[in-house]
Image 1 (cartoon, rainbow, N blue to C red):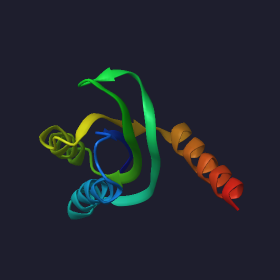
Image 2: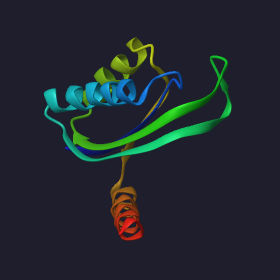
Image 3: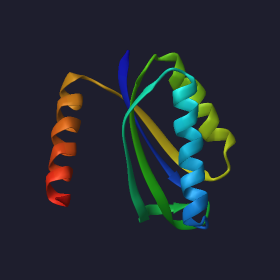
Image 4: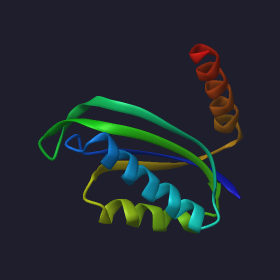
Length: 113
């Protein structure tokens, strides 16, 4: 199993319930394909670096998961088919990126506490 992280941006016109529903849809997709979700971070509504589809803001979400490489193509197809998603990026993590992600999560936990 490989480690991946995916960041996707949802359109800013959604309510909080609709954002949660969209994120849950992609989490369920990963679980159906035998992926282990390591972490999920909702980064909230952020300003985009440049307008996308005439929108200047978007809801950012990061999901880190472990799974087979064939799952990524299906996940990205699901992103393309969902009109709520305006951008996405899925990255395979090497051992150094995995170590960094672990320390980053630890720092986030300690700063919240």
